[in-house]
Amino acid sequence: MKVPKQVSLKKASVIILSMLLGFSFVLYVLAQTPTATYYIGPGMYPGGPAYTMWREGSNYFAKDENGYLEFSGTNASDIIIDCMDQLSGTGTEGGVIYFGINQAASGAIFVFTHGFTVPTKVSLIGQGYGRAPRLSFEQSDSSDCITVLGSAGGAYTRIENLRITGIAGTTGSGLVVTTGVHTVTLKDVQSDNHGTHGFLFNGSYNIKAYGIGASNNGVDGIYLINATSTVGELYFWGTHSKDNTQDGFEIGSANCSNIVFVGGTFETNGRYGGFARGAPINLYGVKFEANTDEGLMWTADGVISGCYFQGAPTNDYGLYFSTGGNTAVLGSRFASNWKDVNIDSASHNIFFAGALNLDDIDIHASSENVTFASVNPYGAFAYWNGTHIEELTLP
Image 1 (tube, rainbow, N blue to C red):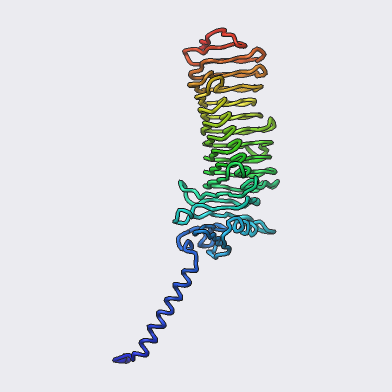
Image 2 (cartoon, rainbow, N blue to C red):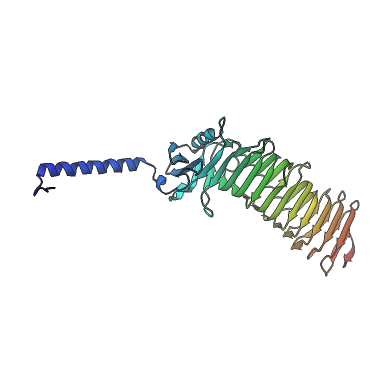
């Protein structure tokens, strides 16, 4: 092949101009494409989340599992509803909506102008741990932020690694799980600054909650009502609830049952650290600290084991039995309370064993079958209907 010794100036100009135009076109296309397409990995290939949603500036984008950009706009509420509509139609099997984090600071915040309902078999999961995406609800009414629907068929939903924030005094509850038997897993979800509850569980569920938290809510951090498990128990591991106007957690009706708290802290709440009704309610290794009134108000049956009660203020108790009964208090510790335990007149069948630093105890006249065994070796001062009767020195 012969190579020409020289190229005409005209031909060279045409070649250079063509290259510049082609390069400019590529730059234009790239500029119109959301940059996060290139570095948010999940959702790029088949087998990824059903939808990956992210933010750039004031714009929101959602791509499908094949990386196809399907929805975009400035209203996050509209986009997530579009995604859920595609996952909840006839013949669909649900799927995961994944909230990706853009590198910019604002890229971790998704602003919603109204709440939404999550259909059965649809899950919401945030990217990364330690810097969870924040779903910020700024609606002007008192509606709930996220509602998860139940299903008699035992549908499965996961909510993971998200922060749900509201506007105090306006939004209702942060995360609501309601209606029917529903298998729900919550993991590393924080729900703060809502007008009512951080979490509301209303109905019959099979719920597993790992590391959830609630703070600065207008009523309770966690509220359960009509909650009973016919499939399995309702477990809460490592829950942290603080600075709520009323209670860290409240079990709001006596027909609640099979509820278990393992670990976790309920502190500096405006009324009680916890308010338990129903049976059986079991608490293992839970800490109640520096709440405005009682650490734990108990009108339930169950087990209180390895718990810690500290900092109940003047005229309040670390643990208060009010009509509660059939309860074992095992290996629990009391410290710096005005008084440690109150056993009200309607309480019955209460057994203490292995309690540490158990001091002032009020036992009212009509209470029945209150037993102490292996309390701390220094004894505990007991008061029967307000009258000091003896120092407990049981073996």
